[in-house]
Image (cartoon, rainbow over all chains, first blue to last red; front, side, top):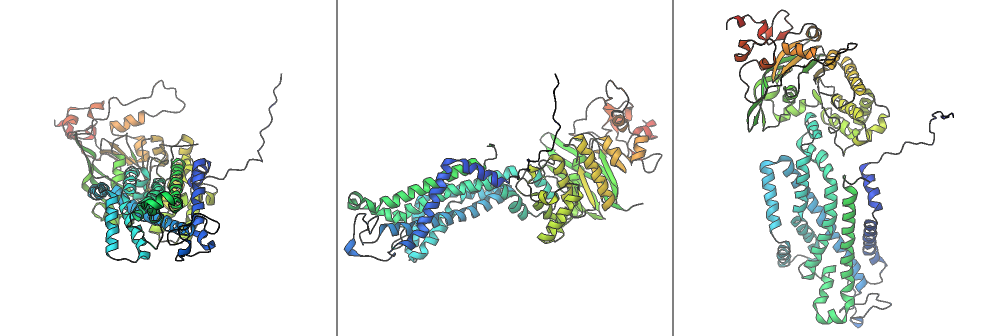
Length: 307
Length: 329
């Protein structure tokens, strides 16, 4: 018996695989998560409908026609009309613009405030930490809805132009939401700052600001992204709740929340469901989609989940 | 004789612990000359790293504190400098290579970003020339495909490559002093040899002084010009490398040299110094080595020996064996 060994030849088919950056790995894991992909598709659709849809509509925001008021869905008004004869579909799309925008901008604001305050607290520790975290505790202890309502009423009292009002709302919702992110970032910072590579940056003579923003915060990005995604949904819900109560976005500016407030009226609620079901569905779909994306991101970015 | 670059004068670094004060570095004085490799040898916990950390100003306080002494770098006391002045020196004139290459690089930044950083900060280069220089540095430390490595992340490199990258970062601003804190401990033997060769080449090419911290006498023999032996926070012997290996004075140094394996000689068991390093808390004023020393005398237990030269002016040690005063007691 003779065993013949083939000589080792260089494998010419082998091409070194392109190395994956952390982002690409995360993307690959994310795209394998079916629910997360469904969530993203829904959200993208929602954006397309809200931002491009109105251009295709034959009506405009301020059109009203009392002749056609309270019509159920039909061929010219696909989702029916409201008590002033305005097209529900158009209003729903325009409302979506505002709601999505409020969600995004408010989140950006809370991420900026939360991550920088959290980073400072975790990095400097001691008094800075105590001060910032106690401040966060205070913010967390305050129930957010009553505060939002009070702020909304204050805005109404100051007689702010309805168009500008949404910007103030974004800021208010954003500022009230910074605590969750600040806490998470602080916790991450506490562990990261003890790592050896931070000693190495010390040895390189880097300044604190650079250490925090260039070396430490990028390490916390997975956490920030996940929390931020989930808080977009929260911000949309807050805005809707406020508008529903009449202290958020106020007519004639439409928002999903103030459209649903039609359901306040018993006749509209029982006899004309086309008034409040479409915006309600929009809120539901958007928040569920965002939450699915958030969950998917969490799984994709968790370094402990290696697949 | 080359100029002195760094001089430690009676450095005292203490750590507060619940059990008492640990004098991690206790009255340490030595010099590093320009273009010279100085090795600090000693077993774990003898204060080697703490000495280097004190030099870099990296002692965490609390619990650590530099309570006395001076560290002169080019005749300026590093301990009296403001944080700002210090950060201008750190990374530029004094650079450090750490023990653990695996965790000393930031996992979320590319190698390129991390090498360019000190260049942009200290040499005030723009991004483009920093990139060019970074690629040169990667080539200098002997990694092929420098352009590709520039864009990779630390987790894509092996331990040896990461240590080379750490060396590249340390060398980026042409430091006058390179501190290497056990740079080869975490690497396997073949890579160790490569890294040491690399450091030796660099010293030759760039005339950098190196302060090498190690507990491997093989490394010392290979690299050092001058050796400082530390024990329990004190310098107990210092000498040029050949002198030290030929003619060790302190019993501890003798023990260390005896404890290394000899090639081509069958040894059942390596020699080991009996006993253990003393508990560093509240050590008395005596020779800390006395309870492990085979030549221990009465005076060793009650009085610390002076640290001074005996026959050769360059060779200093702290041991009563060479003092005349021992007869007095």
